[in-house]
Image (cartoon, rainbow, N blue to C red):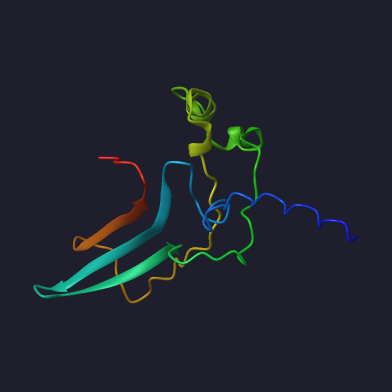
Length: 132
């Protein structure tokens, strides 16, 4: 007589690879963010300088989890004129707030700021819901 093996443990629900590893909530995930300056040199030619580029297109399970920050630690960094960060957070959704720390390349030497300069940001997001 041989005892039966214990039943297998129930399969864990697979967590999406991007969850807690990218800037995302349950409804919306940021894929890319850029802040840049463009200077038009002539009619068909311009130069572009990236101050910051955050690209999160291929997260993996080996990526570290993002650090959680208690929002009460940063309220004072965003002064309240009309409501402020505290009021926005309390109105929710509370999982839609992210503090992003990054290094920016401010050295745009060779690109003079002037009438032909354009400062911009671009971003891309993904969602399983129709967000338009």
